[in-house]
Image (tube, rainbow, N blue to C red; front, side):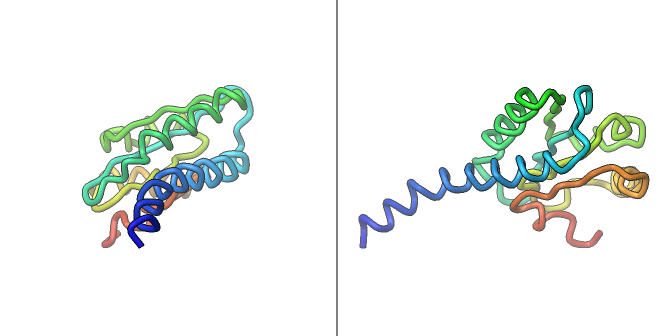
Length: 132
């Protein structure tokens, strides 16, 4: 049984990275990512912090390089302004957790979505903004 537990501990991070990569690839491919388009990958956590977040960011940046679109990454909620979000074709919440946006940032993001901006939530993104 110890060998099985050790195997699970070793393989889980690798599988998580593969999962994140596949989800991100499929989601990003479905967004209008013509050359010159930009996406924002947001990885802020106010709860559990997944160690795979930096690897997921790098994987999505690689997708951008390979498919000729720009990828900005951040953990800074202050990037959620109407003016800043307008430059992005999509925003990816990458394993975000907890309450990471204030009311003004939430309004800016809602406006972005209502205006046609794309959104992808990866893995723990469902563990974000409970009361919103």
